Image 1 (spheres, rainbow, N blue to C red):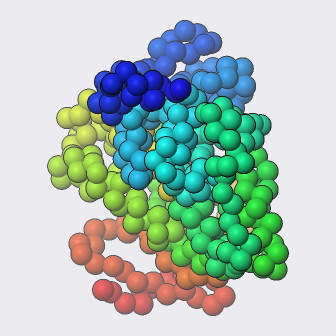
Image 2 (image 1 turned 180 degrees about the vertical axis):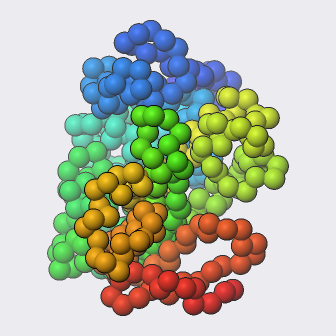
Amino acid sequence: LGWRRALEKAGINPHETCWEVQDSLRCEICGDSVRQLGNHVAIKHQIKWPDYLAAHPGAEPIPESVRAMSLSKMKTKLPHWEPVISPEYALDRLRGWHDAGYDVNMMNIEKLDGSLSNQLRRFYCGMGHDEMLRRIGLDPTTVRRRMRPEQINRKWVIESIRDRHARNLPLSASTVTAGEFKNIPLIHHAMTLFPSWEAAVCAADLDPLAFVDDGGTPEKPLTDLAGNFHLLCAVMITSEKYLKLKAALAEWPDLLPRGVYEFHATQIVNPGRSPWKKHSTRRRLDTLTLLYQLLLQYADQILFGFVSGEQFDAEMRAQLPAELSGIKSKEALKKVFFNSLIPHLKTRSSDTAILMDSDRETENQLRIQAVADPTGLVADPASRA
């Protein structure tokens, strides 16, 4: 029957049942009860998560309470009746879509409920979709309705790629061809109707945004840290996903303390005299966990470059031409980073906006900087808005 239908037969509304979710996880290596198991095994035991998962199948890196928090924000036509997606609930929910009158072929489930589609592949890797349908008491030959040949055209391929992107599924040819996120019909029709899979992805015209910020450690705070360490990072996200990310953050109006307008991880971890000092360690850990999940869910790429001033002066400065011999390590990193980032972005067919955090406060202002030909940034801002 499945748990949902069993409850309904007993006269109980599944949406009105109470659920208890775990707030911690047990490490099978040392027995500790921890909140972030993925971080725990990496830091304490020096083990990568895929290796831990191979030794302990079914393990989760984060507890049910955090996963439930994310799932509660996902809106679908079929409301969730359990707080987290388990192997049993995944099949139960697949049957729920059928009972609600929807087609339950895999391509339609991907469009209706991306999180369910991902978890079905994860929990039942190697099992065909037909066998999943049989497990929930359905005959695949009668309930799986495929698209008619005349419906499959270039427009359908483009819409399918955009839909896949909107549900945060990878778009590389290797992941569409095989593995957990494969979609053989899509890549087959894309390569039939377009010169290549890459050409089909370009035709989908996914407008990217690149958010760039810097970080690092000034001077030499600890003896075993490199001196004057500088880091530049670009988070790549499409304009479509950016709107969804804004909406997701709007669901948490009290996430930032009063008077704080940015998420500075160093202040969250070591608040010092910042407003984060007033918040508990649990609150700060939950904030970092949420940010980590949002990055996983919405970011397409995270590109970064780094150098320490100590290393730059010792190993790199002597290799520079005379006109650049006096350049500071931070400015050199910026030149190399943008001279690499801009050509990378030019390979895309759609326009790109690069937004970089300013070193100084510019209240209600944007400093617009031009791009030099062929690459790089013009030294002075072109205008102010």
